[in-house]
Amino acid sequence: MRAKVHVFLKPGVLDVQGKAVENALHGLGWPQVDGVRVGKTIEFDLKASDAAAAEAEVKQMCEKLLANTVIESYRVEVA
Amino acid sequence: MKAAVIVFPGSNCDRDCKVAIERSTGASVEMVWHAETALPSGLDLIVLPGGFSYGDYLRCAAIAALSPVMSEVRAAAERGVATVGICNGFQVLTEAQMLPGALLRNEGLKYVCKPVGLEVTNAQTRFTAAYGGRREVEMTVGNGEGNFFADEATLDRLEGEGQVVFRYLDNPNGSSRAIAGIVNDRGNVLGLMPHPDRAFEAELGSADGALLFQSALASA
Image 1 (cartoon, each protein chain N blue to C red):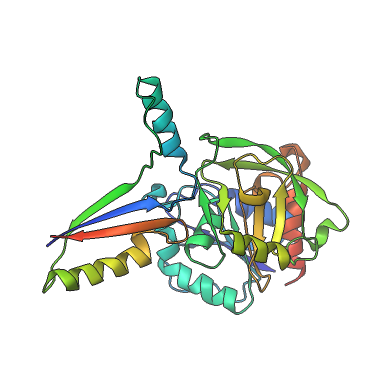
Image 2 (cartoon, rainbow over the protein chains, first blue to last red):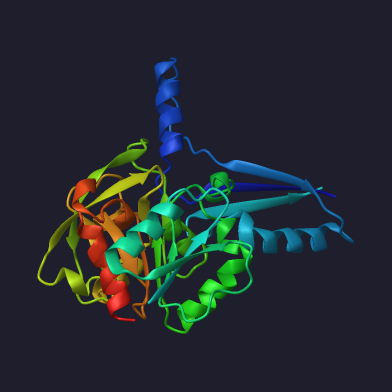
């Protein structure tokens, strides 16, 4: 199974990278862009009996390492 | 008196910390590699140094916080051993949940490296007793991700319980409530972004950092 974990700073936590990208997009002629947030995607293969078991496992990985839940939220996709 | 400096792959202030502690206090300092599963016996102080542990991969200090030695550091801190995390070491302590909050990228997007004025917000801690009545000190910061963040309730609690130890006089990185350093609720674990190890003798521009190491070891 292939897992994809999307990690973003929580709403309300200042994302200076997002701000810098937003300013760059404005400078390139897209003034209508607003609310840019930069996150990351972590992908990996995982052996598991089914998707639900895999998802439960990946969520534990997120809580332990992949995300810092003080400042970040995460979303797990398993396929 | 005996201190240990933990060395992670990518630490770069470990030697500075050793020299700073030795010259400030006369304590003997052992360097402890992150893969160790035991700490030297009889430690009075543990220091987690600055640097870029594990290349800051994933998040600053995320992987260092899971190093084998960290369960020993946590156990020692729980026994009451004075523990100080400086810069990347502060990030390690938050990632290890030994201190609340987290360190975000600097508000101004820049790596900030300069001397900064600090208010000694709480002079009653075991890390600040030697400052006596002095309310303002100077140390050097060097960080790209030193922007202290915690939710409002946590910030209120930190302030209410006297856990804010140092505050920037002129906030260089957007830290919530200008917080530069905090202690845990028990008062034996300190994390700070400014470097006392870069301010321990007058030749470095300030000797104010020496008092921090002296305080930590005087209370041992």
